Structure formats: structure tokens, C-alpha cells
Figure (cartoon, each protein chain N blue to C red):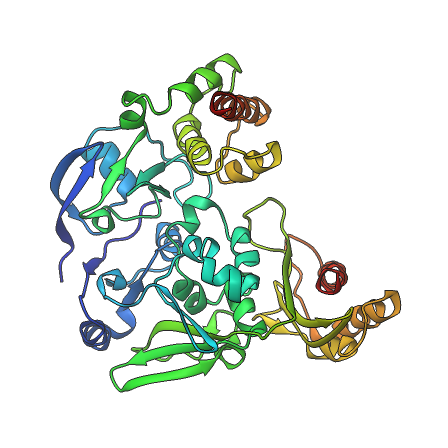
Length: 161
Length: 284
């Protein structure tokens, strides 16, 4: 049986083809094979959210997906989403609200928060907390993160009015 | 940690899945969404020689209404169920339960078939299936069979699924008009495994409840249909006395084990609290 599989993943718009070990997680493929170390590895069992990436537009845990499972799919990481400007408003708000200290959780936190901005722009403060409950931060106590996300949501809603 | 080494196959038909499963027996594990399996592999709780990725098999995902039956394909994600208009209309209990399953990033990948096969006693879908009297569709080389969810769960992580069998779908009888449902659970944080939870369904007629179903999670080795409590409230209005009688009857239904979340007495108390809230919600 095959323990390595030829796999093509479109990473931030660029197709990458490699022969990957079946056991390799998507997050290790991104960090070690592609060299995109912005996505972090925390708990490696789906609890902390530091490895959150987008696969075919949906946020997923990079540690709970094998690289080979992403074969033929599109993966967006913090690097691509930063460069595209999609996260700019959230990044600015995180900066201004001191919504990070060590920054380890920040890439996953931003990608999860942006998912909320895209899917539920009317979210209340409680809903923000609930949505980000799958992303751990050990520095901020979350308050500043929720403040930052709330500001981005309010500004976006204000701009629409 | 990293998962131990294994081989990987992605068959394109159920027959190929059956052939691989037969050839590799206990050494092979089925991979669907992977949200439980990959975590257990990472923690080295399991070391299969082969993962059989069934997501390449066509026809195993999707939600379909046929007559009085709603069928959900095994590979349908939690997120798809959460946002399905068919589910919201016909089986609101599932839409009520879905947000309790972990977090969005997990619900985007995890599947109902995977959850049913794993059979965690604190998981949401098994209890919903028990409450709704669903049938789990199981396929094998020899053919297809249907197992009632109420007979599917045999013990802790133990199901009626035999060697070489694959869950392909789950079929729910659609409750008629007048039914109400609610799903409640207590967890330390949103998205954590439930300490205790309840999937509740009943026909509500002018405040009176009939055909009441109360299926508890985290209260025993399997999801538990609380027959004594259900009988205590059947045909009654959930006033203070009727709720108290139902809560008292739960002692005959549930035998939770103690763990880090609390003693058996604490969990029984929490189950009673949820039971009271659920009955009030069903009647209001």
C-alpha cells in the first residue's frame, strides 16, 4: 500500500505538487514543505485553533487534516490572506486594541475572526466570543480580541448603512 | 504529537472500500472527516496500518426528503446540517443540536456518519437519532441493512457495526405537525464535550405534551432514552409538579459515572436541571 502519495495543493493561489507521506498533516506540509510558517502548531489535536487555515473557502484545522486529504483543493494561509489585504481591517484593529501579546494564536485568530466577518457581520459580542471559542489565547484574556473584532464588525455595518 | 505511519487509499466506490476492508481487517480504519480519528492518531491512541478515505465514494453526502423520511448521507458535514433549510423545516432538533458540536472549523469537516460510527456517549448526533427514532443505514459486501439508532449503541464506543460494514446514511421519520424540539447541553466552555445534554422532542397540544422523547448524553456509556421520565410526563402539562415527578423518575433511567466534571450525583442533578428546562421549552 502507498505510504507516500503525489499530492497537488493550490496554496495561496499557487499549485504545489509534492510526494507527501500519508501521515503528514496539512499544517506540517504548509510549514515544513512549503515554508509558510505563519500558521502555527499548538495542541495538534484540534483544540487550540493556532493552525486554522482556509480550505476551499472554509476554515479548518490544519492539524486535523492530512496533506493528502487536501489533494486537488485550494488552501489559503495567513500569508496569502494578509498579502491580499483581506485581513487588513482586522489586523489594524488587533494592533490598535492590543489584541495580541506573544502573537502565537494571532494568525488562527485572524482567520477565524474573518470567517465571522464574512458570514455573520451582525454578530453580537456574545456571538463573537462563541465563534472564537475554538481559538485559544493565553496572553490577552480575550477581552481586547473581542473588542477588536467588534470594532471591525461595527465599522463594516456602518459603512453599509 | 504526529500520527504514527500508515498507508492511505482513496477508493472510488463502495465495492472497493469493502474489498480493502476485507483484505486489511482490523488493521484498516475508515477516514471520513477525520475530526476524531486524526486527533486520536495524533495522540497515538490508535495505530492502523491503513486509512481508507471514503470521501471519494460518490453519493454518500447530501440531504434528501422522500415522503415522510429525511435521509442524510454519511459524509454530510455538521456544518451542512446546521445550515440546511430542509433540516430547519423538517427536523429542527438537528439544527438546534449542531451549534453545540465543537467549533466551526471542526463542523466544516466532521461528518454525521463519522460521529454515529464513533459513538461517543457525549456526542450530539447519536442522541438526536435515538430521540427521533432514526434508522442507521449500514452497507457491506453482502448488502445493506438498517439498524434502529435505539439498538445501534451497545456500550461505551461499542456499536452494532460489524467488521467490513460502512455507515452510508441515516434515515429519520419526519415528525408530524405540532411537534416541538429542543437540544440543551452543559459544557465548561462552548464547543467542549458535553458534561450532560438532552435531545428533547414532543407533540405539544395546548400546553400538553405527548409522544415525549428525552435522550440524554454524557449520562451513561451510550445515549440514553429516559423511558421512566418520558412516561412520567406523557400526556401532562409540564407544571411544577409534573416536572418534579419527571426529574425524580430520571434516577431510574440514568446512571452517570463520575469524572473530572463531577460526581454521579452532580451529573444526575445537572440532567434533572436540563430535563426541567427542556420540558418547559417544549410546552412554551
